[in-house]
Image 1: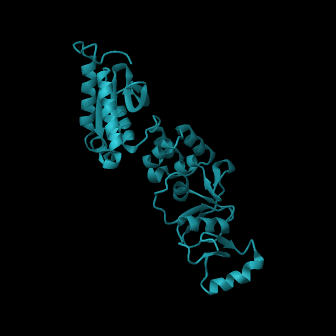
Image 2: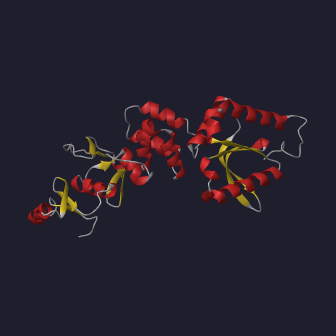
Image 3: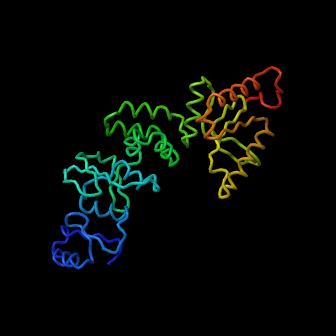
Length: 292
């Protein structure tokens, strides 16, 4: 028997007696009514999900389970949540909610039915906030995708979810970037764009976190991981980009995530001082007061 195989006696009633005998001898393990797995196979989340789907073929994995399956593989998940339109009784390790997910909001991957990434994100906004939203952005989804999911399958707290999503309208790629966006808006600093492509080096292109292009000011957010040996290439490239932009007349400001969250007033002061310096009539017109 394949180590990850799931047997459902409801689908193969002629095997029911043999399966029960193997279970009595310890060869098979009963996971759900009529659903068995190899007793020697690790009952990890993947096998548990296959067993649950075999038992409830019309059910759909939602929320944390759907996020782990589609978007966030390292997410810690103990309880598998499913939307079960038939309203089956609860089972150990499962959380069933009696509802039907719109067909357009369901995807099937490797035999598992789950909510689409936009709907999964929309449902987890109250629990995970920016963390789940920025992961969706890094995976290529846009705010309007999540907005459409909110409209297609409204849930309690709909307006609050929409308000949180609106705060991410500039599509940050990290929680720290989102904090920088909040800081800029609250300080009334305008004219900036997020994740802008700027030419550097010999025809190379770099995506900068924040750009005030008309002032030639770039703002970058440094994560702690950039200082590890395994990110040496990132560290080297960031310094190359900063030096190249400086040589082209840009001013490059770099802030760490910790600075953004613990000392936003200082961050604002530095940015405002830099803007004032660039706009000063005494500022060298050849270094940073040119249009981008």
